[in-house]
Length: 323
Image 1 (cartoon, rainbow, N blue to C red):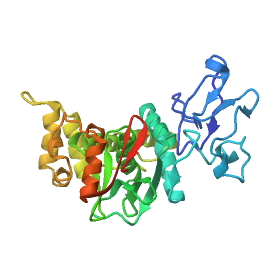
Image 2: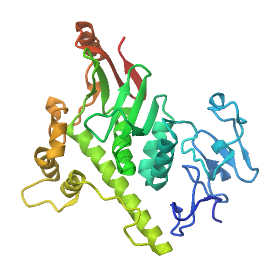
Image 3: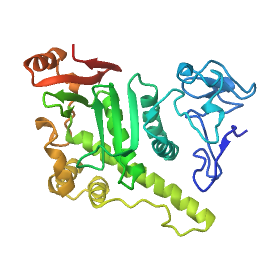
Image 4: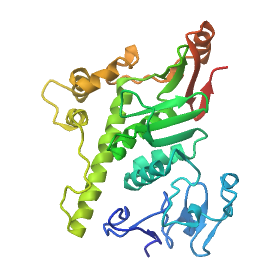
């Protein structure tokens, strides 16, 4: 028996469980109603029993939403809202929430698992796809030391919100999983700790994957409704196309994949701008620098000397900050 799913307009989404382009699941973890373990749906933070039509626990975020009963889900409106992890991310505006929901629904299982990790973290990730505060780049992920939030920002003028979220949410996940951190300099600028070529290559891969999956879904929908194939498709910009070639083209004799990606960063005009931000020892592929590789006392010494004002990174699921 097919599990119950919530219906959406087929011009926007389709069911990732089957090839039939009609529905999309509202929960992130699907369990078959009859044969699945526990005969229930696991929404991450709570379990839902479809036979009783009841949640088996109160909403863990109920204190934030006093206008809802703690025993409702999806704002009591599963047609409009999704709640992939059962807890919360923060959005700067409705456009950002809509863009994230579309990104989540189009993502593959691995990406959805990463997003669920962000969603249940004790770190708050604030997503803004209509940002007016970015300077020099179309998107960035940074840390607000005043609010203790990770800021996932896409410029209001950037047309490709999906690809940009693929890039920046990958960066956010790398912060969550100990790959990078952030430092507040004495000048007031925020810089990334442990930032290396591997980090930026992972982010670019996230962008490419998001665009490819969106276009695959869009093309299928267009065929169903008789629209031209290119309607709603996202075109990669030149630097993203160059990275994709380095990451997927056949490897020439005498070279390695890492060398092809290194060549991309060293020759592409846009990619070259990242090199100065990489750690000195992280300007080649195959080197993974984690902020946690440095002793906390060493960071504190730098703070005491006045070079840094504050720092933050994750280590085994725990946020580490200055004393």
